Length: 257
Ligand code: CTP
Ligand code: MG
Image (cartoon, rainbow, N blue to C red; front, side, top):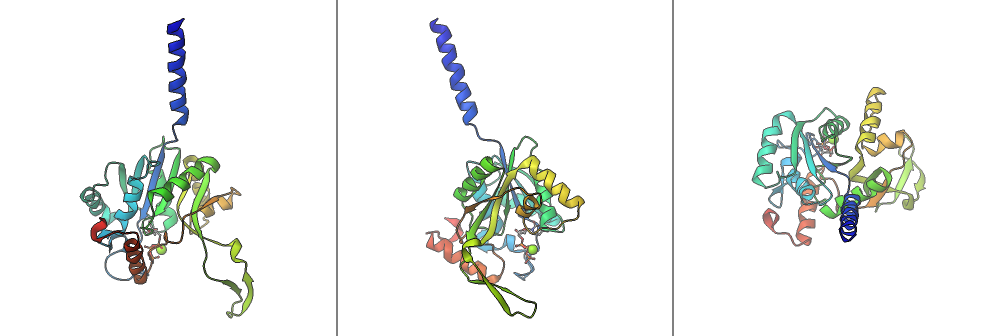
C-alpha cells in the first residue's frame, strides 16, 4: 500500500515536470544582408558596437535566453566560416546548431533558416541580426506569447505623428497614433505553421518585408509584445552612434563588459 502510494506520487511528480516543460524552440538569426544603407566595405552585421560585433550581440541575447534551445545563423555564403569563428571567439557556440547561407531576400533567408532548425522544434523565433540591442527578456516575452497564440511579434509605439499623403506629397489625413506600432523582431511562430505559410507565399510569389505578413495573408492573428524603441534596427551610420549611447546608458563599458 505504502509502495503503491509512493509510486503514484512519483508518477504525478514526473507528469508535473513533463507538463511544465516548454516546447523546444529555435532562434533564427538573419545576417545575410549586405547593409547597403550603412555603406562601407564591411556588412553592418560585422561592425563593432562598443567593441562587440552587431551579429554577436544578437546571438548572445538568444544564447543567454532560457526559452531558446538551439540557434541557426543565416549569413552570406562567403561569411559562413567567419561567423563560425566569431561564435567560438565570443563563446556563443553551445546552442549553435548551424550556420547556413541565406537567400536573395530577407524572406528567403528566413525560410531557409527555419527549415534548417531541428524538426523537433515546435516554435521558432526569427530575429534581424541588425537589432543588436535585443535582450533575453524580450525574446522570452515574445516566445511566451507565441506559445499562447501561435504567432507573436516584438513591436513598439511610434513616436512621430504620421500622415497619409497623396502622390504629390500633400497631406490627406493624420493617422491615429494609438493604432500604430512599428514592427520589430523577434517574431515567433509555431514552426510547422510557419513552414506551411512561407511555402504558400513562395508558391504564390507573394513578397513580404517581415514574417508577420505571411500570417496576416492567411488571416492568422499575430499578437504584439511591446519591446520598447531601444530594440531598433541598426540601418545607417547614425544608428551605430545611437546603439553605443544606449548601451553606455545601460552601464556597459567597451567590449561588452
Ligand atoms: N537579411 C538577410 N538576408 C537578406 C537580406 C537581409 O538575412 N537577403 C537580414 C539582414 O542581415 C538584417 C535583417 O535581415 O539583419 C534586416 O534587413 P536589413 O536591415 O534590410 O539589412 P540589409 O538588407 O543588410 O541592409 P540594406 O537593406 O540597407 O541593404
Ligand atoms: Mg535590406
